Image 1 (cartoon, rainbow, N blue to C red):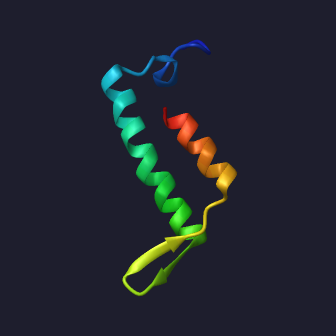
Image 2: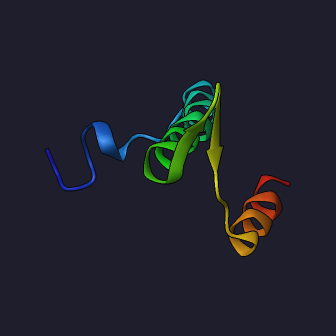
Length: 61
């Protein structure tokens, strides 16, 4: 098997790419909550930097 062969050499199918895209948002949200979040009553509150929030909104478009 050459360097370009094997499972990593194959391109992702559209279905697999959609699955990855769908998993990315909740994973990043969970990471942000676990690193910066805190409970206030029954709600989780996360302080967000305005520049990061803007960049995330632009990337989502």
